[in-house]
Length: 522
Image 1 (cartoon, rainbow, N blue to C red):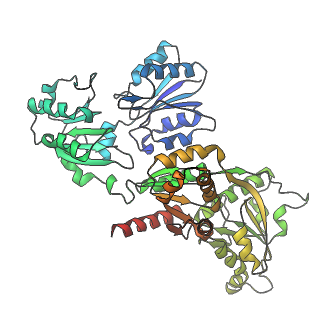
Image 2: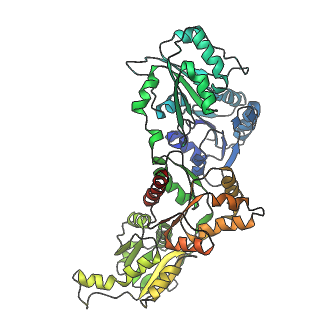
Image 3: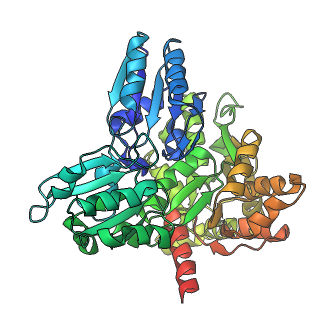
């Protein structure tokens, strides 16, 4: 039954959204989302999902609240599954109750999915617990944003006397009023305090101070919204409990130019090290229509000595073609399997297939040498010259762009290579404007190119940019080329990569980025 799901996305880190909230996103026909929502969450929505941005900045609203309510009602009346995606928790200063009241009044079915409020989750990420047995047995969450610009309608005398933790959300603009009212009503000026800016986001920053110096801290550090202001002894625990801001890639932004589905697999590893991932899907991967039985008697790969995979997509779409042709892995029993890279190996082994030939160096040259040397390898491991078979014909399950460097390497050993196109790799023209806008408006530290095609697509954007502002912007961004083939393609276009990864694994790429950062810091 269609309904409107009012979902709390948490304070920023997309991993803090609930399982129920993510399930709603995956089935939604439309998502109405706020400014303080990690847009990478939206990438998990199904194809064709309508995205409606209604974000609010201080003194700058995309839509008035009444207009947002009307949008939700109109979508809900169309028998659609709708997600209203809000930062934090919808019922903690999120105006969620107003939106749900509008739905109820219009007779629209709804469901509330609570979220992690920044008052708790945001402070936890800063190493500040809202309660601690020996310091605070209660906490108070207060909006720092009153109905007018200077007043906050609370009982200041009661708050000043309260022994628990005081947490002010949306209070930076009124910090002078907040501090003055607390101190004038008896709160000790030396009470520990802290500001947490962009809590749980990749660039979270915490400023420790005391109540007396809070206004000065805001002015000196130029602290802006969104920020949490916390007052209480629990702030003193931060020195021991904080860790988020110490992660090696904290505050860095890494752009991935891969197909969205591939890029999503790398997100957890990148975020684990503290960086933000910006997905710029410059290429689009789609399955090809493959006939594995051009000959009615035998599958197309039956006449080859070796079946080769150089990408996870090659494995995925070859196995799909096998399934469509009513074949399974038993049909691969008489052919050797060659594999390049950790990701390709993981994908291959997920189907229960162990490769005979394996290399991790990210270029076709290393794989061609491994294939050519397999006969000698078999002799060394106990095979006889009668039973060991030389590899003379290789078939590569890849894309319309696959195989050039591998073909070149195998040709030196008089080994023939044919490419079986199981998927297409083409420029993602539909997303070019979005990519250009993101590059122009986002501070990017590193841009990763996984293949020549991903670089060519970005290069095409630069060529189309008449005032060359995009080219200037890209020249300020450090680049990471995966493999010598990608690096060579970049050099041929006059663009020297900052880092060349010898392995197509995200762990190796992140290690190299860390090394580059550490080199700069010395």
